[in-house]
Length: 368
Ligand code: ARG
Image (cartoon, rainbow, N blue to C red; front, side, top):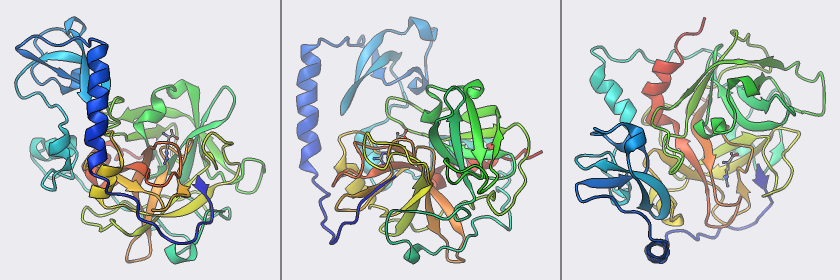
């Protein structure tokens, strides 16, 4: 969590022309590197999961240089309706806010998907958005839905998450690039890592890590995962679930709160104490034009417009929180990635939770 006190608001986004120029420079570099191209009847896609029509076994697919603002290594797929993320398509307003899997789940299920049951105690604390003015440490029971992932070797935290119900924690898919379920502990009810008994945290092991099946590490699309705890938790003052937003919740240009134990400056130390920082959610168009990397309709951007307030490394998987009309807190975003931290014009990028409500409902039901 990164935050400094900055007075005044300076808009510095919407520089549409820049990305075109950067792409051209990148293209030149790729030509110099003589990136492999695909045969005429196949096309280069970022990874095997974009091939709808792969006839070859995956290992036989030729490697190629896939261009999407940045060059990543891709594979050649027999061309025809491959599900390639297309920058222009993603950025138009009629592009769907739903993830492809959520749309497919709708089509596939004969009955509507059972809505995710909301616990009456979800999202309740004694805070209001307007009372949170700056980055600050919270008190121990402020954000009782926070989960933290620790690696078992050194017991250091590498990601955050939120409690969905007694059995499941929502977090980011990229948290599991390095760690598998035997390498981690999920701690609920933590607040200050330097104190032993302030909250009586409880550690759990993961019995299942459900990474979104369409997560792609090259583009960070669908950066969301659900982790199943080895036993159901019990709720108390320090352990309670978050609420989920409704599909139509209006979030753009509104203030959200991001919470975590991540770095308090880029490259600096992770925090011992849970931090909170208020950040406006950027308009989608300002978000896409802030980056040369692909931004999807299933992303949200948030950070102070003039820099200084942002999430940072170690906050990943943690929540971007917004208060509903009824005062309850909902998790509207999952901390995904950024360029540096808190730099002016480079907001934090989040996975937009409302795009994954069906996937969450399907994957976080079995609470016993
Ligand atoms: N990917 C980072 C992590 O694993 C999160 C970075 C967020 N960066 C930002 N500037 N908001 O912790």
